[in-house]
Amino acid sequence: MASQRGRKRRKRGSFSSLLLILGLLSLTGIQAAHHKHVIQFTTVGTESSLLEHVMVDFLDDVQVFSYNKYNQKLMAKEAWISQVLGAKFIANTQQKLVDHEKSFFWFLKNLMQNETKHDVNCTMQVSVSCENEENNQVRKEIQIAVDGQEFCILDKEMGNQIILMPEALPFKDFLTSILQTTQIEHYMQEYCISSMKNILLHSSIRKNVPPEVTVSHYEAVGGINILSCSATGFYPSSILLYWQKGEEKILPGKESSSGILPNADSTFYQQITIELPPEDMKTDYDCVVEHIELGTPKAYPVHVKYPKKRYWTLTLTILSVVILVLSCIVSFIIWKKMKTGYSFHECITLEVARIRNQGDAHQLRNG
Image (cartoon, one colour):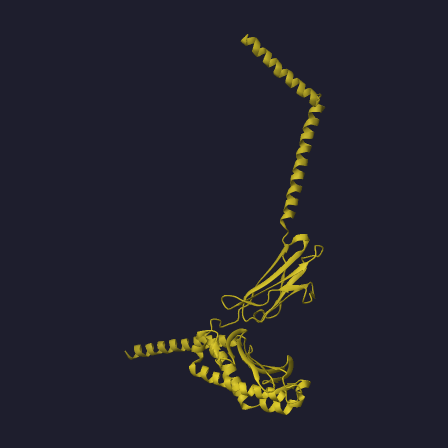
């Protein structure tokens, strides 16, 4: 009895260990995939007033949250995201965003303190991003732009290295003191990294998906050749499609693109096409696709399909050959008869005379 209880405990222990291993493997699979979390702030104001303050949150290029100064509410794109992160997280983050409005406005005022025109608008954009690499290392970065121009970059993985543009040099001490505070690090860890991991654990997409690529060709009016390359079902959305002829890459602008579009299953789609003149050879073109799940760039060749009118041409050619062969056979038969001593006309005359004689004999029998 004791030995049976021992075997049962060992079985339960083995089963629990198996569940634990499977759970760790599934979590490892989620974390091993490459994901990127980006929080973008856009602030517009003058030296005396804050005109606009907007935050948009993206996870793998899919919008997760949004916020603006008019309603001062953190809005989740999907209801389940708020449930996953919890009401406390949503409330705390929303209050921080309200407080951020004062900080961003204060930053704008410092940027515009030497501006002679007091009613001029200034636009500041701040991008906070964190992404996990293939070895599960997390990369964190903050970028600031002013009026569409890069202002400074803070790379948290390079020893808090700050890259200042010439326009930002007068604000060096000011920017260094702000970007290297413990509040920034706490924000990066709590909001950027932790929320990304929690959302991914409950997301319908838990790993990257490679694209399915289709390359086609058809001939348009005037003999113009259209080459089309489509990639669909891939995740995340970061992808690069371009055409090359042989080893030469076709310069951007010569092809048209649909842009990266979402599919119903949260994956993405993109198509690029290029027009070629009738005299251009089509068999030396490849569509090159770069995506994180493909590893190195992969080339997909064009398979040329000839248009229907060429099949009609081939059919007519075959019919012409058949008619020519039949004509030769008939000519040979006629020549053979002529060689035996009868002309073609004589053969017809003798046949008519035979039919007439048969008719006369029939009339005599009936008479």
